[in-house]
Length: 353
Image (tube, rainbow, N blue to C red; front, side, top):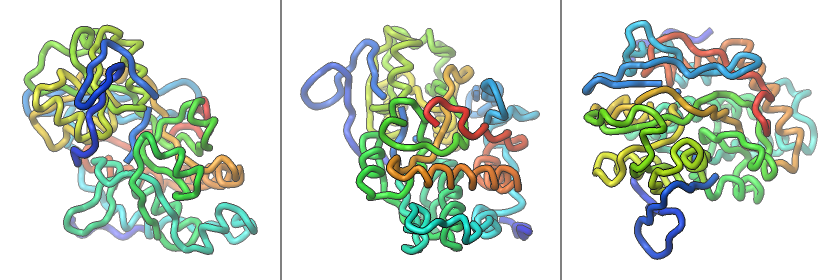
């Protein structure tokens, strides 16, 4: 049983444009590349209040994950969880010894005693370092700790910061055992790494200044300057949904947010889950409209060991079934967003999973 709780971005990197040379930002009408954040659901705001416009729509087949709309319509109106992330992790299951086969990816992690995780420490609600405790907090961070406990018996993880350009390489060369980084599953990425899951589903949405009343849907981005992360699926999505937009590519979420706040970009397009984390504590910003794509998040794993994917998928099914996934959602995302936990997506439902 989980005991009841007692009460209780950086703007680093460079700005890059598409189709231009030299330093600084080079904007281009339209093109983008690849999706995913390194370290990578609708909401509408009126002034400083952030009103949920609706939930992420479920995508075909099985239980697909989405952020529920709240009866009161307020993002940031989530209730304090009855338990903390640490309590959820402490109560999480441990794999039976028979599941850790000799010589496997799991056996190597167990012998080391620590799960090497590629991710971020600046993603609100998913993986952000608490400036006071120094601990990583959020849904992705909690899941990585739960997986570490499932394998080793304790939630010991070591974080290596990854970017959209380094995730696959760091998995391939063994720098990390796994990547938890709001990592969208795509068939192209699945040629390089294996994906367990999906474990969450988001979709591209639009962030603008709270005072902006001219941008409410993807078509409104045509002719505007739009920030997004380089090597992200959002960059490609902009080509499709707003081909006449001038795209600015950045390395990190914080840089994209800063571009909007400083007036260098009219809007910022990325996963709604990421954008929601940006706006919950900043009344200068809002997320408009509904998600216009489907972004299934997967757990990145080395492709060379197929046992790893099967093992992590079995673990996901376990925490889906015993309610630990939902409890972690309540302790992280659910503290900011009102409503019940969404249904987790069906394992293997994404193309590339």
